[in-house]
Structure formats: C-alpha cells, structure tokens
Length: 70
Image (cartoon, rainbow, N blue to C red; front, side, top):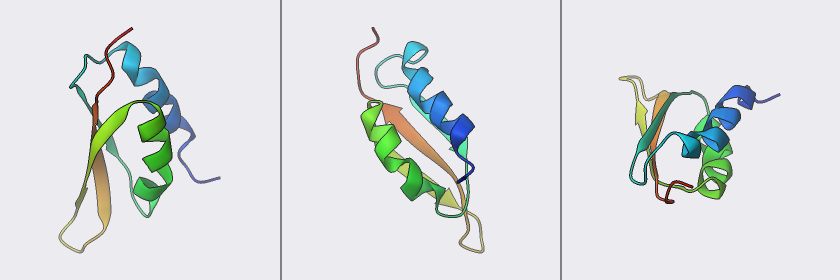
C-alpha cells in the first residue's frame, strides 16, 4: 500500500551482504523516508541521510549498517 514492499525486503536482507560500516542507498520519494525509519533501525542501520532535488522533493536515502556481519 505504501510502495515500499521491495525496499523493505532489501533493507532486511542487506545485512547478509554488507560489512559493518557499509552503506545502503535507495531511490525513494514522497514521505517514504519516514515510513522506512523503523525498518532501517530494526535491521541495524544508523546514520540515515536523505537527499532532495532542486525543488525540495525527496529523491533518496543512504543508511549505514552498524551491526557486525553474521
């Protein structure tokens, strides 16, 4: 319903591929950064940074994975 099903799957699986300190970068829009915040933190991501276009619209985010790889 919020267009984030695939992005949430990527977030929850990213820890298998990233080393501690690695970054996940995703193209998103609208208010999806707020909707993903809980999922990112639960999956072990921190330092969430967003970027916007010249008109102020959300275009993406980057989040750093802080948990050690298992």
